[in-house]
Length: 334
Figure 1 (tube, rainbow, N blue to C red):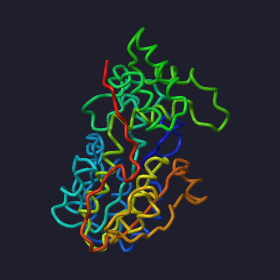
Figure 2: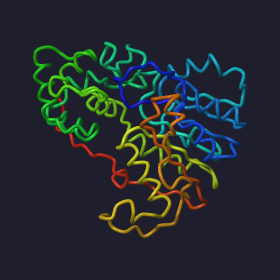
Figure 3: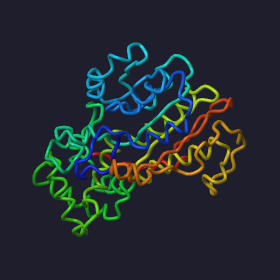
Figure 4: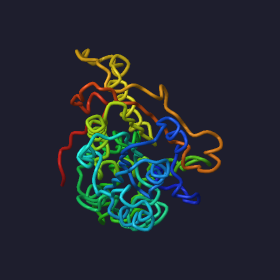
């Protein structure tokens, strides 16, 4: 399961998938070939398998696939494991899919490993790479121009103190490179008021923004939704669980546009000539955790589920800007 808050205490069970019962209810009956685009600890995959489906479990994190070896054997050839990303999920099956489930954000498994650098509750290298490839968080923090860093923190973290934080980061790295999670968290915390009881750590939004940038999460999401549209057979189900307002806004707009409700998605955009529904909405509003689930699994408190059913209409190309994907122009690196 996923959690957007990289600093909150990890006392509850990290392997409980959020909103599982609402998902299974919304997509029933579960049958045929499904793809779980965020395998993680395998919660959704195992539930789909136990319900009778065959599943392709996909994750960009090679450690998730290694962990799956500890529980996958009893499912035999009903389970296929693939190291991959949202943007290519239409290439993994070779045949139209009956359903796709996507659980967005960082996984609890990743948060709990200090050496992965996602959480500021445990000191570790400033990494944050889900795939363990490409630029790390430390690379971005220590090389981006101050304006670019401020824009990134504001656009991807909705942090209103982004310019103050970026200036503090640039000032601190001039004395010594920022290479650990706790040092970055301390720099950010000094820029903001002390949180009141119950409020998140001051560095939460900044860590979220940097993680999203490191893993190109928003472009992967937009491309993944388009890939899901191409991959699903008519009647196939798409279930997406989000954990913060930015990614939920993207998913909501995608479903609005794809269901033919273009006017509700962006009233300022030019009217589209083709409003043929490529999806029918199963959930008209986002589904959230009920009191029982919140009591069992506090990590579900910010989760939102949206579900839609694929129609027989041909897929269309998607412009990420139409989905509200934040656009950032960078000056470069120092």
